[in-house]
Length: 119
Image 1 (cartoon, rainbow, N blue to C red):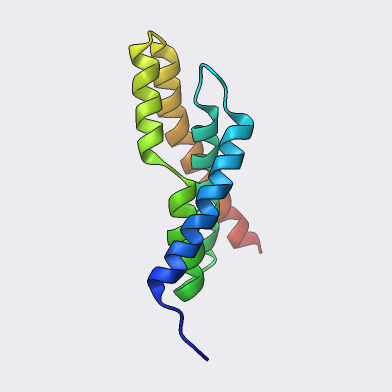
Image 2: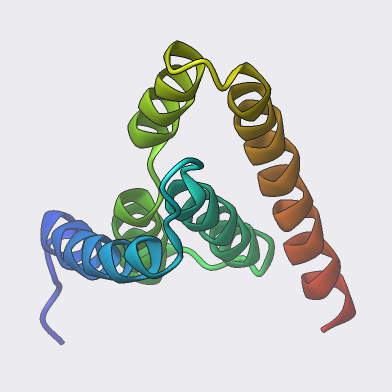
């Protein structure tokens, strides 16, 4: 069996995650609120939580966890979107985005944990 270089696994997963992010975020994005970024961060947190709590390791963790989930989720877009809301005068939406993203991402991880304990 030929070993695949870790960088190739991460890169391949990254390409898959980036394309998935593009399509999902674009499908749900709203003009005023960065719903696309919010959605990919919560979904990505759930998927990474599932992988982690299910004990996925090795090549699969590199491909899906580091690569796909790493490029699917985005802290930088979340940060910029939050600051833009604030600067545009949507202070309540900026706070909702910041707090809501954190709370929902943590809830998604909790849900992933619960599902792995049941299965």
